[in-house]
Length: 507
Image (cartoon, rainbow, N blue to C red):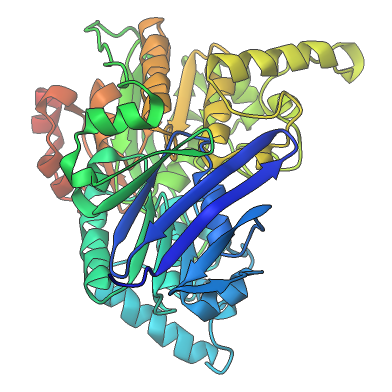
């Protein structure tokens, strides 16, 4: 019998409103890729933070290579050979990529040496990263690449990955899996958290299932089906989506020849974007992270008002120079890809976070009807099954998936006439993902125009009526969902798509 790389015994972690981990035991062998599976709020991220030294357990023990250890902080974890890629990124916005990576490495290395190492590792693993770029200019997908490279540079013996593929394209996922299988073959152990059951079955050779903070099962995922894993995780199989055929109505969002120069040296110029979304349809936009999605979303939401007024029309009104508040007045609601900091204020309670985009609880003179605000938040928590310590729980106290459910629920509950949503199911479990996608289709069926920007192709194929691909700031012609395939969309992601006339005919 080989000595386990990591062994947790009877680990318990309590918070005032919840027991996050309840008598959890877990064993990881050298070279093993071990999945930790569970619905949102099951305690997965808390357990990983305990292993990484970012959170202290209340009870239990940890053995590292057969020896008891007390990991008091991430620095001690890294010294043992443990690296972690967080779901919520731990990057300083005002530093460059290289400077962020440098902070977690041996201080005997110079910044120039770290920069060269990043370039070499990025080239080796096919991860596009610019060491000199400021982090605040990166998209979520690009930040994820930085975190993965930073972890790989430490030459870990145990690599913890928390939702590493949530904003990666299928091609990028394939490349990452090649990297992970190579690491495992070299003896590195991997703890892998993902809600994508097909990924777990393809990559992992062991799996521990958590529900409500407790271990409810241990299995070899290669011998399971998506349905059986789903039953272990949430107690049921996710419901099938019903995509009713319908004829869309009049155009709600019209984008005509939108051209915007980049605002930072590493940004993307938007080049002649043409797009329309009609009432009662879902239009999806696919693409590799960093190809203009962020710039397009800023222009559509009103965060960037440099466009010509007529370049963006909402219900026929020239909106290119309008700010977010005026666009909300026209019926536009928006879900950004960045949950903490843009979608929610981390230190504010969920109820008060409603005020970022909702005004129903504001009375005359700006007085807040707190009871009404609490009732609205409680209703969203109930409807979208958000696990939180009540309407006043701080946004940062929620797991990533539960915060995503609340933010998406906040905007859907507002009954928008036009909804623009980025990465709608990032980090949520299979049951919650099915619910959110079902809610988007229900909005569509009620006559709302929905634009979904996502790097999850399966998601786009499930909810979209028409699809575009964005590449290098250019937008492809539309293609009907029935005519789209993964391989075709993958080709278009490189910017190679047919002439507009042919694609419009297909749509």
